[in-house]
Image (cartoon, rainbow, N blue to C red; front, top):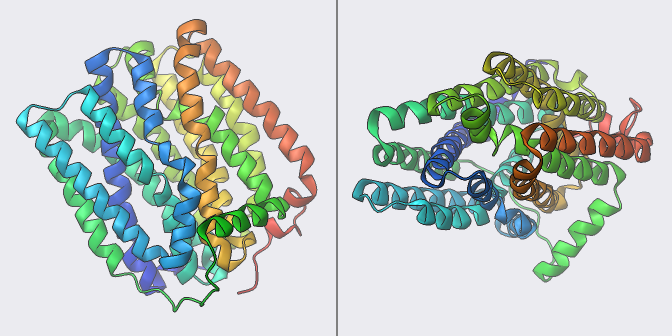
Length: 409
């Protein structure tokens, strides 16, 4: 099966550039504003607070899933991307008029944090609505590549644009990316929706929780998703400005290079996932990737030289792709079609582990130091991964398990 076969689907051909533009804009915003907050305040605690605020909406992501199942994933995703464009325009206006400061950035990060975490889950549900099951692994891998490539382009372009144009013009570019994404998302044609009996949104949400709780592959995947967000992603995400500035002594361009190393490794790993396609056993891949990921973070915590640090960060990015893409495949494969929006919404609820991990990491680093705090996080992550794998091994490891075999379409 050809790796690029999903592009034969008209909806995917329209959705992929929309998702790509959105992901690029996300990464430019995260890098530029994270550095702005750190430079303005000089505090790792405020930096982790900014990063955590961007994931505030993970608490209400399940309701976005309910709304997507009710009104359509394309309609809801389009409204969200229109909101992104509006907030980017506000930041551009404040930056151009010299009124942007750390408090304003934190307020806008809070508003964006209510909406942005649900984007990934909804775009996955929209892909599942238009994609034949045999192409699901390749489609999710290609979709994931939009985020991986965005971390490279966003990191390098974000630093370059700010250095060349300044913050205000950079945000005009970000606004343009969001507007392009909105236009392309509106053009995605979706199949006719199956009429469902109307119940209360809270009943829909409760049914979504029950669907996950009664489905062991879904439950195990949700637990691992929460774990990697809690114990792994704080180091490779929100804390990278601290690592670049305080550990490696680099400037904003150095931060961009460090982020691009992680993203380049992730993109390479995603390309391998795309190439392997249906031959990949998603649950096995997810477990083995997590078991390798956390020891690499322990080693990364010991490094003080940027060159070996960047090399290891590239390898970490490569390894984590074999967990993150299969997670989405398992959730969409094992969830019943009427529940896909809610399941992906609950998947984003698992991302709430990231702001928890970020908020706790600031005081932990101030108290223990970066090396000890990161080692502690990675040790907890490895122990919990082993516990989850042991508990659900019948549903994750056999090659004939539901999570390792494609559903007939």
